[in-house]
Length: 128
Image 1 (cartoon, one colour):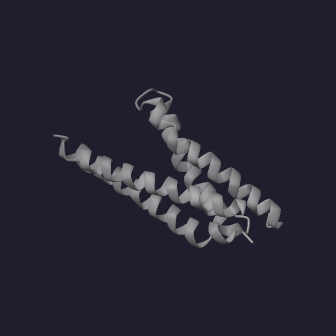
Image 2: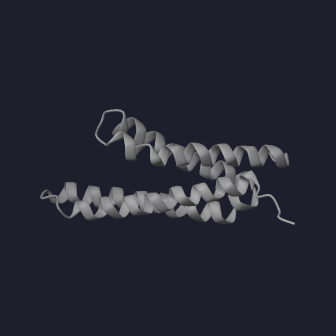
């Protein structure tokens, strides 16, 4: 008999996908920094890419260890971490039009879906 996959596991998997997408984005930002002629600006861009990769790596680790097990602390950690990262992206890059809307909505969509499924999983387990 097949066991039903819990909403919290779907949420955890979506956080992992969000993290993988942002690991790739962080690497791309780092690569782009090599083409900037101003050394200080290039270093700042490289740091931004590294910071994004660190946030993505933390998100993946939290999702795999805590969200997958419907842990309340992990729920709040990833909800806060990913929300802060994506709200900044939306406000500073998407809304002003510095990043194309189509591909730019993939990360926020993953964030919203991960938060939704994680919340459903936590509520069903009575962990709120």
